[in-house]
Length: 170
Image 1: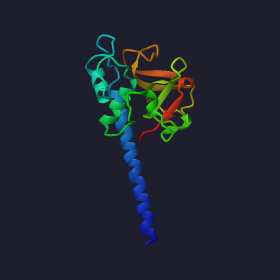
Image 2: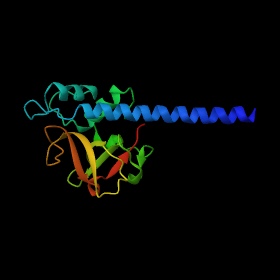
Image 3: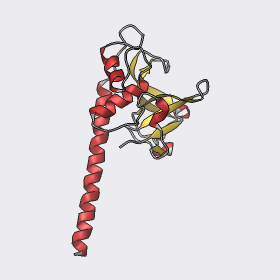
Image 4: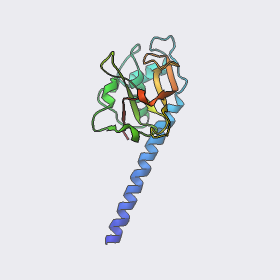
């Protein structure tokens, strides 16, 4: 009986690991497929941008970095926060990790002193503990300069010092 219980525990643990791994792969595949999306006129608009905004309950013209993160999660049938278009809502205490443990596919946030809050979010595109001072990200509503009011979905290389918080929703 003890042997059966032990095997059941191992099986359930392995199955949970594969499920989480599959979710993470789905998230990564989805956000990667959107790299290169650009706004139509630079006014938080365009077919793809508007689908991200709609997934967060917003219309054309709103800042959309958090809406992009939410859209990616919804495509993978994973629930995000109650206010998915609000960047700080992606970082409730129970989801926040020590940054060193952030993995590819986790959500990162950048704090803006001028706003007094996290005001830009995106995805880590490599594990935080990569042995470098920089990290690859994929983010919506940014640009080559790394603005929080950009024009598309970009893969960026950011200084780790820019990353304020990391959360895991998987």
